[in-house]
Length: 208
Image (cartoon, rainbow, N blue to C red; front, side):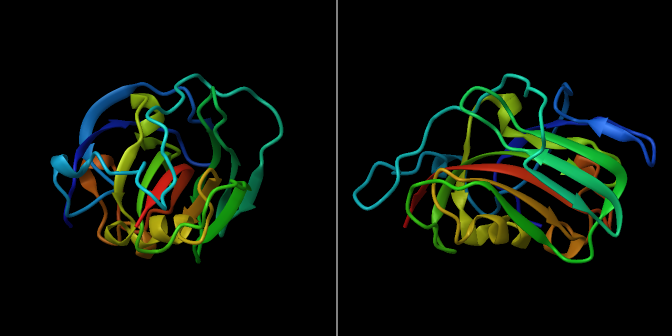
């Protein structure tokens, strides 16, 4: 597996079949995650160029409020409830573990008003990744307070499926199979073979 930039990990270990609120975990270690085959010099992308959507330069770090989830999904095992981020608060993902799906599911939480994102675009996003097996948050740009920029055709398939075809400004959730995530696992992030992953994503900008 190729890696792009080392990012901060967070984890919340939960026992099987318990409901985990993974919004308030604390950073514990470093690991490689979403984007692949790019250098640190590629982080700054020209999102303000003609024909592109301008990206924000921060991700909200405040804890999310309660309320009715924007998406609930019952899996082959367990379930998940997702509320997308707002201008001031990070997303909320509650998992009844172990959660798994047999096919990748994408849901638009809030549609944006920007242009449609092509499958080959370079994008800027805020995101939080949660492991369905144990409810742990294994990576979160919301915790770091800064978005991540990368070519959409160079990431794991489930992440591309979640973003391509959406509009800039949208908040999106995806529950992806292991095949669309890390089929061989990602030990440094606590991801095992067969783990279903859930992402809450905010699409900030797109170019190309």
